Length: 333
Length: 299
Image 1 (tube, rainbow over the protein chains, first blue to last red):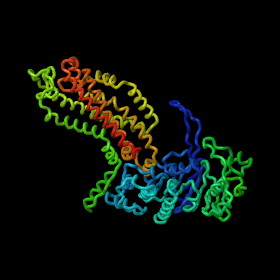
Image 2 (cartoon, rainbow over the protein chains, first blue to last red; image 1 turned 180 degrees about the vertical axis):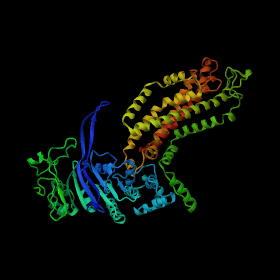
Image 3 (cartoon, rainbow over the protein chains, first blue to last red; image 1 turned 90 degrees about the horizontal axis):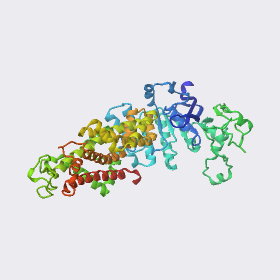
Image 4 (cartoon, rainbow over the protein chains, first blue to last red; image 1 turned 90 degrees about the vertical axis):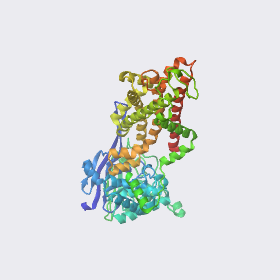
């Protein structure tokens, strides 16, 4: 069973310290971007990570990639704790963990041709000779559905969807095992979103990839994920198999998110009762006491503001279904 | 980065087909070509460089040769710009003087660009203490009047053209460093830098292949404009007698020598002055045009 987990994140914390003043800076608090998060991803599956803007999803990906240092916790990839590796070992493992970014306009260098961009991973990791590389680059372009002839074009000559395909090709270049998709479709048009999502699912089958799929939109995640984790203010509030989460959401926040997905049937849409979460996300500098969701929760009671609920397994059908709520499963009236 | 281009060339030879490449530099060139003032500036700059290179072919006389019987003559067919007190041909001297100005402009600015890029990269990319220290030192350089600083350094080092390169080079680094730093700061957090880091690219590689090409445009613009400033400072130093030493012809020195005779022999002063004016104008116009051409907002 242990072997089945490609990536396991345990008690991951990332606090950004705030300082004020010039020269003599003093510590004035910290933003708890990621606060004690644990999850695992099995080989070949897609784990969706959902939450509002600013809840720490992207930070999770960045910490796993060691683009920002973690505050505490561990991320075990294939049995190795990534945070314990020295830079040489990490360099080797980077080939296996790649990332697709959110904004296809910012993630490609405007001064490099598409060929140079996709070729870069080969250069960095010194793979193949020139001839092999160019062949590989063209093949990658074909794989992601771009014309290999476009190898000499610059990113600004492409549309958003095409640029994202270039980003996917670059991520695939090193034949990774784990792809961290950081909101790969949220900057794209809905019609293009579907294309990229289909591309990602096709690639997963073809190359036996494992995805960490980050999004702020449950409807997107629903299509691609096997299991889903819902984040709120740096904490994981619910983790479950995709179907379970949709059919029987336990956490009131998840219920709220699910209710925000429009139903493409005006009749049904008019009839259903939408759960509208009131208020804004509280500041992660000063998170609320107890359950961080209690300020917006329609089910909140006294205990919610005093004690912090733990993630507990509420599974009924044998599939793990974790939720952090004292009143898990209680319908919202 | 060269690999793809090389391969492209290989493939072009093998298959006989041509790739069309449009880069941002090409776009900038297109825009620059439409800007008439900038093209005038470019023309002046190119002409000046040609004049400086082929000075010995163009000038009719030896610039330091004294023709005793021709001293203090006004402009004529024999001496286009007239002659000075010692009977030297001013036209030839102005032509040879371009060498000093271009050399100072290019080499001194080259020095300040190298220093500026190094410290700018250090301060922008790594930040922290090095950033604070470097930028405060740059502030000190900014607070110092350019000419005064140049005079101070020249008094320490002594006159001579090499020392002018050093003085102006040292003084000009701060603006380049600051501009490079600010463009690094905007680029540093772009996702393509993060993508490169996620791939395992080294700091060196990120600076050379990602940050450098993406922040080079403003450097070119400011370097071009700095050439104009450097030429003026050199002229000022030579005018004050602590720059290029006689008999080497330098425009600033020519101005200083002829200043007392402005009412009787205005040509002695007019032509070197005009040369300085046109040269600086050329570089400033070109720099201005480049700035507009590289401005992505105009796209």
